[in-house]
Length: 300
Ligand code: NAP
Image (cartoon, rainbow, N blue to C red; front, top):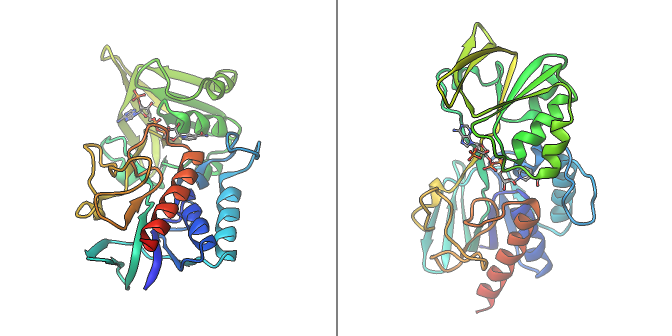
């Protein structure tokens, strides 16, 4: 029986693994995809203490190596259910069932879709949710990024270095993205802002060839392009655990700064938790807090 089973190998989960291992607890981390979570999509992290510049991939790899070196075990299996029977928690994957004394759910979030007809069919054929993964396919081409948060603005900046032209489409005039990053984007000559507008249609043959955007007055504009990057926020990945974790209306796991859930011995950490600030540094902080709470629970 594992002392601390962590679901999700993003910054929150892997930081929790480091803290739990340093307290000499046995640690198993289950990850559905590859380690790193959302941060691997960030080309350049500039706001993590001490490191002025580091790519998300390098950050994730160093964190993974640190947790492994401390003795955390990683298995790449998706947790589909957590059963709680008194002190024993059973985490179910399609291949196995793992018993643990405590569980930290650090599952992060999935990209939100635009909800435009044909979107799913065109993923990988012009529609993408990850600029750093797919941007290189659009070298010297025309692309659009949708969204007004940090992800959209950073994606547009990244693509502006590769593509001939980048449209930044946002449904209103105000941005959630921080001012410093937005200023950098505004200085790019090959970026055009299309504000107060949403994507209302996708045009494609085998691949995406263009989009229609409609502004708040109902005026429609056709834009010919090769790639469309949606960066309109994320959906927390808590759906499989709603029996043991209370979720708010948006699907976030309800827990305060102690990372405790309504189920004793089950904790949440990172972007899937209710909180005001979802940043790399707060995800890592959650990992430390959740692991400390789990360690305390084990000693009680
Ligand atoms: P976000 O901040 O929630 O922004 C999502 C954007 O998409 C918003 O501008 C929103 O518009 C727009 N949007 C939502 N649904 C839409 C729809 N159906 N159609 C069109 N537009 C839609 O998401 P994010 O940019 O992914 O960032 C998530 C969190 O990670 C944030 O806290 C962000 O600061 C953080 N982050 C930080 C960094 C960094 O520090 N380097 C990098 C990336 C992300 P409205 O504004 O009108 O709601």
